Length: 420
Image (cartoon, helix red, strand yellow):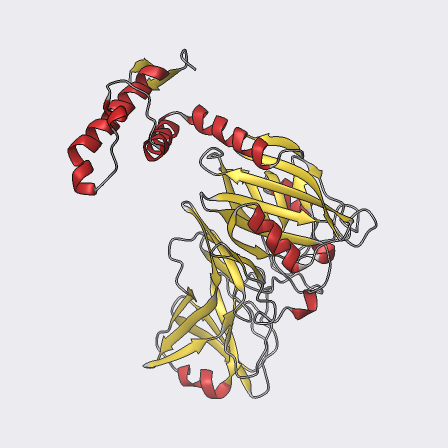
């Protein structure tokens, strides 16, 4: 450690010298401002070039050293992972990304679990984001391996719920700030930004204005749930909008212009929309010289680049919280294969799969999964699609044992890939 050199600007400074300088600067700051800030100062810490012994000062010093010395941060992460997952198989995916295999027992029966934990500051060359089965349409499914290979990912897990017949995601999905599908049933979602992660129960917020009217848009690229809804469809849905509801109409919109209106399915223009809803509502826009569409979420996650929804909550603000009934997910109760995503207080990402429905692994209940995610340090965590969809990919291999070899065809995934 004494011989480690830090490159600062054009100079090379021995690590211990740098540590002493930081110690002195911290102590000088506390001498000058400690009284104002009401910070505890101990006489033994004021000796020049002495070791810092006060816990708060040690933490401050270590944090600064980690910021200027990436190797110190990596060493700390590796030690933390070896302690946290002691007794389990820990594999290094890349600096700052670990893959852990473990077996837990519930009522004396085994559950095979795979975990990936990522420190984004260390793995700064990688990004976390959702990915769809196809870059051309939402109406498509493929294996996780195929999605991972297309996105050059080192890690991938299955993502949110989807319509089995078509592959269209059921719930909020945003990639690179583009909203592909809107939320349903006010289900929980996780937002991903360059600064970290956020969770919340997200609602769709959209409107179209024209003819001095403001009309609510109820969702985007989702199946119709109520005949009274106004739904927006983009080319990601397909070439044509779905059928209109009874007494309904469709408006073909590109730019700020309505190009056509019809009761029959209309061609969705490139970089445009087709709105489908009751004629008594959309008819108010007939003849409008100009219209404007706004699409977003409530709450407004303005700084979030990506969103993927699932449900129910598993951990909320540090406590176990499984709101399965509120999110209309009673059908996924019981003991099943599970997939989860969460993050710790210091913004480490945790991805987890638990195998089930086989003798060597019986699966987990949502409450068991929630308790496990909390025990791993998650302050917030959500359930993703599970059952036959549960699958994890690490460095070219499917590392869990899904019911179908390689996993079933999926609609979307969460991937960790090299930044372009």
